[in-house]
Length: 139
Image (cartoon, rainbow, N blue to C red):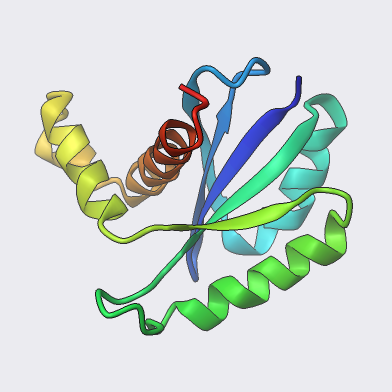
């Protein structure tokens, strides 16, 4: 089986999480500079097959767009162009950064380590992927 990959896209940084090949476990992969997303994914997919790309969709509580929504939509278009054979789905990313920060506290990370925004982005991507897997029966 191929992996499912989840992206927490941001203006500067992008957190990435993936499943194992059997799609049982979601794990943080890395956080990269957002401008490097397409080259990073092309390189990653040379050795790891991916069957689905999820990307967090930033929306307000009333489902209206946030300031980041146009950035994510532009990233989706680039992903579709670069990977036309791989389906791309959006997932709700509301509260994932807060949930990631809470998870870091629960893991016992020191305050200094919890300020690492790269780690927050990676954990947020992992949370979105876990929620997707739970919703669609992958767990």
